[in-house]
Image (cartoon, rainbow over all chains, first blue to last red; front, side, top):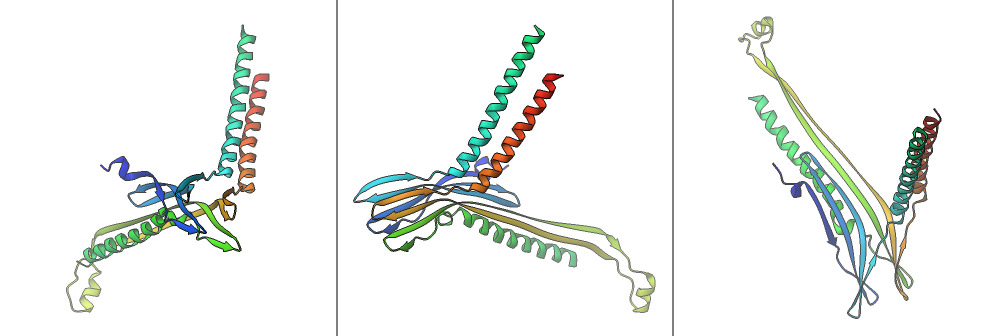
Length: 97
Length: 148
C-alpha cells in the first residue's frame, strides 16, 4: 500500500529570483499535488513575494481577495441559517412548554 | 501469440501516454507557472500572479474472448486445416484540463513594490447568488415548517 505522503503532497515552493531595478524579487507559492493510480491533480497558488533591497528583506503577502469574499459570503449564509434555526428551535421548545 | 504482442504494445503505449499526461500536469506545479515574466513599461515593471489548477487521468482496458474456429468451408476452400483464432480487443483513453485565474498584480516602480489584488466580480456574484439563494430557500422552508 502506498503511503499518504506519496499520494498527497502539500509544500511551499520558491521560484527563481528576478532582479528589477535595484530590487531582488523571489516569488513564493504553495502547491498541492494529489496523485491517483491513473492520473494526478495539481493546485498551485501564489502566497508571497520576497523583496530584497540593500540587504533588507521584506515579505509581501499575496491575498486572494476573490476567494476571501466568496468564503465570506458562504460563511455569512451558514451563520445566518444557524442563528435562525437555533432561534426557531428555542421558540418551538417554549411553545411545547 | 498475436494477442500477447498486442497486449504488450498496448501496455507500452499506455505507459508512454500516462507519463506524457502526468508531465504536462506536473508542469503546473513549477514555480514559474504561477508568476508571469516581468513586463516593463517605462519606469514600471509588472508581474502577474495567478492561481492554477490542473488535473488529468488515463485509463485502458483489454478483453479476450474464447478461441473461435472459422467456418469449415473457409478452411476447406483455402486448402488448409481450420485453425482456432483468439479474439479480443482493447482500448485506452484519457483526458485532462487546467484552469488559471489572476490573483494579484505586482507592480515594481520608483516608489517600491506594491501588490494589487485582482477581484473577479463574476465569480463573487455567482457565489453570492448561489449561497444566498440557498439560504433564502432554506429560511422560507423553515418558516413554513414552523407555521404548521
